[in-house]
Image 1 (cartoon, rainbow, N blue to C red):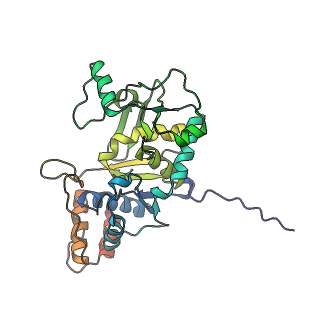
Image 2 (cartoon, rainbow, N blue to C red):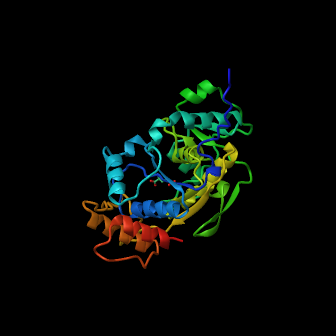
Image 3 (tube, rainbow, N blue to C red):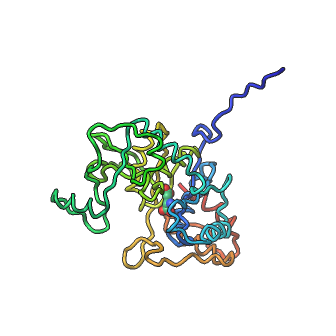
Length: 315
Ligand code: GLU
């Protein structure tokens, strides 16, 4: 009998070269801001001869809009932003996030927390700490006992509490962003022990994005600067889970006339991709925002030709 000995490599390890991704939450169709993130990450992947993956971040079901996934895909196709490999949905990958949570439990790094937002606000107020509006409250560690235990796997599965990651005493994270250069954040001072699974059982963005980026072998994360404040948390989680840290590049945000980030909440209008002419006009606006000022502007150019020129111009 001949035994086939194969040295099976992890199909998506960083050794395979550049792997980027676009990871929209299906809270609505793409608007000018999300197109900038899609185009910037696509151009960076193509310029580097890499792969560009599309991941739907649909864990927070109450915020997802029916039909948005199909709309997003259709808009990307209309803009010529083709993705590699199979589309993934976070809602179908819960087992991976649960396993990561179990791993952190074995490491005695997580604990259940029953604090309501109001209770946290009261504790902070009692400590004389005021959280400015629009800013997250720094968790004061109320539910964290001095010596963390490994909780029973049963409790971890059935618990109706939120689960937080216990930060080490010194948790100062530094990284180099390809656009914004040196960044640092002290997680204890600015964030506190953060939630990995909410009390409604939903895994948080922080945990899911770190697990997916690692399991999909993502080497480069190109996304909007609104997510910059999450990066230190994600790098810390990568470290404790033993994952590779990708290279980060945060793109300038598109703001509305009030200086607010475009989002569904600020009623951003969806991009118009009804035909090639409109889709190209949207791409041109996104490219200008990305600093690509000298791309062909003729009427007769196709999207494919224009994207080729944009890829050449991307630095
Ligand atoms: N799902 C996030 C969003 O739509 C993006 C996550 C990421 O790129 O890390 O804002």
